[in-house]
Image (cartoon, rainbow, N blue to C red):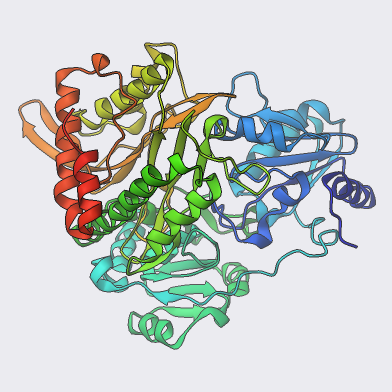
Length: 595
């Protein structure tokens, strides 16, 4: 029977929980690789709760339950959970208990908690086990209670793999595997298990199509000093991919055979893995005699430091993408006064311009086209019910990106086609000032994203404003739009920024029930100088598209900020004009006039 409402689904789950004597059940959207965007098969938390955000976990108890999500989704989650009986737990706030703390505090001695072990990482598993110890709460990994009640659950993804061109990758798979094996020798380890899908794809110069927004494929990579094995659904392997992988000495095994392979490891073998991204059920099958060395996957750091070929490809992709965004901006200018623009047709129009670009694969995430108060929802997605007509009365925030063979893009621009209020002008100008301040920052080698986050956030703090998210994230090359390990945030665990890394710069102001403002560019980390005090790095902006100036309170801008904006707009005009027709060039010339 198809269960159409969230209350029906929760009742069905609780019936299954009773059959298995579970006092609570944890439901996530995670695949076994902890991907940000999982294939539809894994979207169990969305199905059971009705919350559609990309981040968040649900806990269902016999009588109640809750959903934990971060600051990007507080507004959206509160709306989508209405009528579900599930409470919203605002994760990362000091007063909010973690899932482990909540369950340990609320459950009785010797309770039983269930979860599909494939859908939680080993790190989450260990956190739960530690919290449950005092009350002898049992954690069961082997019971998938969602599949029996989700009659129309999608099938596991089966999209074919394809080769990523060497002229974009800049290094062969063999060269990358050689670099990885050096890490094995340094750590005196026998094997490395790569679980993160974008790391597997990058290491082997392949891409997939398992998810709508990321060209990845469910797979594992197991590397020893003399073997390299890809575990993947063999139906996804095309003749071209098989030939390329074989050429580089990569063996291909079925996805389901990894557990058997790990069980065959000899006692005292040392296996490197990252417990944050490896599923708990898989780890539970590894013999206890195998020594598990938990560390950040070395492939992640290699991938983050783009080589010269990758950077050149990404910058060319950003120029082409910027030209599509300019065409979209011109369209908005022409169409908004006519009353014909809505959030949804704006999203489709921008996608249409991107589709004309050679090498286009798809969107890098669902476009956020938020007019008025919708812009205050950081990850808003318009639908037929919520779709606003865009007019001259409020801000219109558009955050979008494309996936291309040559790179991944992510850009936000905010527009106002009427007369902004004094508060709106101030907020918009502060966001631009925050963008400029971080962009202009010079910093010493070894500085992390946590050290630098305040350069943008501090501009807003001085006016009593904050945003409940990070300031920026890494970006892949035809891979994840949110790529680690580098980020701008207040998390003290952030890594040092290094030349070759790219990272977004996207501070914002979000006034609930009113509007949202965000300006986002991708920055490239570069070395500036080395002197007697040390090595200093800085940023170059590689996103190219005009920043609207009609909402600025120019009296708030310093001379060097005006100079930066004018120089950036000159760069946009110079580098994007060759990709545009004469009418659009004229529009761009007007949009980039010095202020």
